[in-house]
Length: 242
Length: 110
Length: 113
Image 1 (cartoon, each protein chain N blue to C red):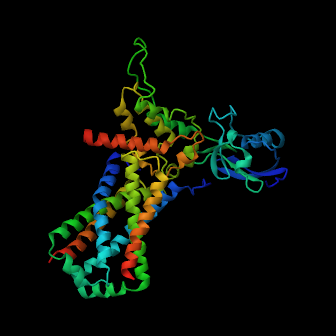
Image 2: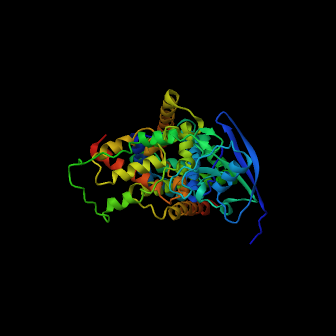
Image 3: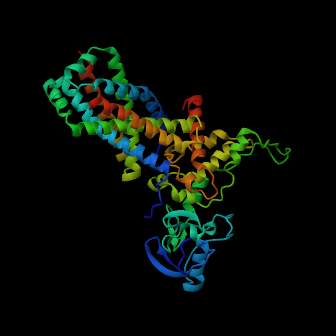
């Protein structure tokens, strides 16, 4: 194995949306070190004004995603060893989102689209009814289960070139959420779900380039979920004739 | 960039063209043997209802398909939108159809 | 603006589909115009077809046939994924589309040399 030098050269994005620049820090290298460890080291030992976002540090909360050497990653579960090139790291805020400051991207557009996609449960019964029995081996349930581990980290959103070119596009995460609800036996309004993903920014804008699936840290498959929505809407197109 | 209607139009025009493209490629491979001449092409196509319908359908489908495809690219890569995008998309569709229709008439009408 | 590394197979399939589509769309008006010569100036059509015998033009034709084939088979792959849920072996299918396109344009190549 190649021996590594004891310092990492880390280029970090600084400033806010209108005024961004890079600042380079020398960070001590460790055998076991995540990208988030590196960012935290800078904030704690080099420049306490560095802004970034994290919470759980174990890949549950989805708040620490950043661009690392140009690729979107959850920084708390990304080992430096896996991504470092010649002892250098470049760390930037998530792509396709406005920058609040330094490494903190403004997640508002991402969550606004989550709401706009209609990823909201439509109840099929009231609290007075008995709890619905769901068969875990049912085909639709298996499909829905495939996507429920999404942690809203927006890595897919940052990876997607369709989002980059089309500001109205709802994006992989929000569309995948709708596909989950569509396959949920307890959701009562499938047609409204399909309608909400059939507009100009909906599932039909997707070009199936698969960067979402390629980069999803939880190894989900939003591209296939969006393909599922295309299939369901196409079927309803022939059925409903509109 | 595409809503359900444009998406369906894009997919349906693609499905219509699939056998036509395969046929077109097959004819090209067959006809390219020993070089092309105007007489050879016209001898095959002129006065033929089959080739008129074949290429006529092809031209209609490709005008729609190319216009929708370019519309998306104009929007995503060049930031053209709203009224300008509508005009350009329809313009591309119409221009391709007119040029194509003239070509079909030229080679199939005797 | 920073770019994520994109050289994964399905992104390459997407960009190939898009670029081939653009070139084919740009080629169409020329193609239609040349054929229309049959109506207006048959002599010039023959002149053009002679010009098309030049090796460099032949090479461009083979390229166009490759682009047409790769756009068609790539499109078939997309529609299969979207409508028949053949989602598992997408990378293999994408590679297959390129392979078949090479085969088809290769067949044309063998005919014209």
